[in-house]
Length: 384
Image (tube, rainbow, N blue to C red):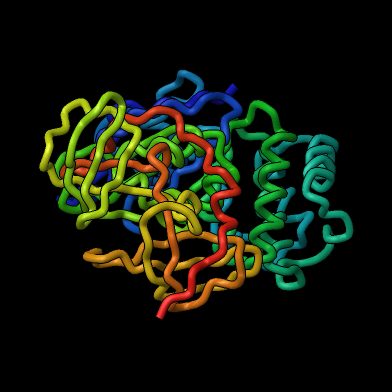
């Protein structure tokens, strides 16, 4: 078992706060991903778990043992670095065996652990090669194998895919997911700035936000299963970070309040949102949010002109100019016959709209209604 507890953990470098007031539990066997923009402290938090940095405040426990004062070697964690950190003069076999030999394990046990790691990561035929003879993906798999043979309680991954090209990133991501299933109760903590990696790998995402200009606010913007952060972001920061492409934000004012519904005015365009009206007042400035995949093109009473189209194959990104809006509305469409200058009908489904108040906090909402596929299939209207 490898349960991790962080209670009130903070980190400062001199007078500069990097992490603040982190309360977090990572269950045994959980795949937990720390994600966030550059400068939010996600790698620093990983280094606190590894023992490479000391917390300025708070407690860290692994298996109910306080590890604040324990050196890295006594925490029974294994770290996989972005830069692989392989010994260049050693073969793959020697790289995997070195740490175990240093711990004076029996030769038979060392070979057994190496054989199991080779099986899991499909490293057959590479054991006598040196790192310079391997591709980037193979080097990263060797670095992971070197961590596996230690049989740690916790695996720590510090942006392990950053140095790989796009195809290798996908392949290695799948291998890491398979590794997590194969290792059972070993917990994995993974750091990335790529929210696609976070969404596809994590049992739970911990989204960190930079502290600059935020005083004593907590570092954790939201923690939960990936789809919880996607469908129910706690605030505008979470809504804008999770999802690719990012959520549309539209400045509006509350027009009227009903039972389970908020009517907002967007530069003269009425928008109904299926949200709790509690705490809102008519005339209050708010920000509406809707994900590009939930904008319905080809239906509705509103119309907007296409200002740009990005054709990506299966889907196109269609940018619509809304009257009075400072930025275009982005919609996803499977159609390939939409052109710049088209005047398109569109709709913003009430069940798919989010609302954020002036402080960025999200207004409470129910479950997100499914957007009907049929709504995307109406033909565009050509305009001058």
